Length: 143
Image (cartoon, rainbow, N blue to C red):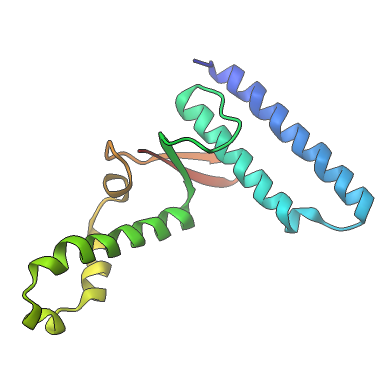
């Protein structure tokens, strides 16, 4: 398990390499790559760093079956999809067919999202872990 100092060292190396690659691309092409795919590269690296801070282990990429690392928008979209699936797989099956046309699916999903805990829905242990890095917030969920 890495100490916080070791995680910071690895994170610094990752971000330094990104800065070097970004500067090289920008000088070679004369364009602002941060508006393009480099922005995604930074986000993926920051997600990896958040995961390293959470677990104390080095992750070179996010291809782990043990954790999900999401931005707030990604977490909200995933939570909405979870609510939709929960409605279709569980709730709708309990409503008699002849009454389903009277049931407001969108209102139920909206109420569920407003009342339920996102961490409980998206994580196997019911927790949502929040990390803020360079002005961005990332949420980690155990699977």
